[in-house]
Image (cartoon, rainbow, N blue to C red; front, side, top):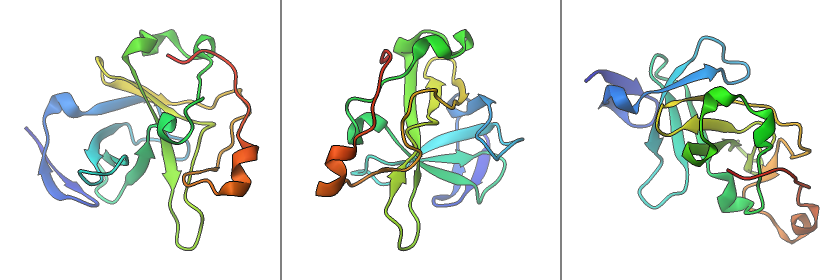
Length: 152
């Protein structure tokens, strides 16, 4: 079992079977293909997608259904190499900046096959926003993104 340095959890021993391989890279991060999913906190819905190679690279992710229950994927547009949609974990990258409204990217989800531990980031043709508020206010309720397709 290898040890890795992480951004938020220090040094960890991980099991090889916990490594997620992104055959379709995260936009802007070519070469970063191996990650592990780590909890943010025990009572938090957020996860860290931590690079196995680069200690300082960790993305905050969340299941989009927690903030937008109507979220659906155009399964027919996604590669068959992802396998059975029933085996997919769907995560959206979050932007949590200083002084900014936290948001999740509904347009480009990460899709990971839970059985094979392979996946990637995919830009959907659906008109989902890139910055959907994590904590919608009253004014954003009427601005929910339109959607179509089939949820896995």
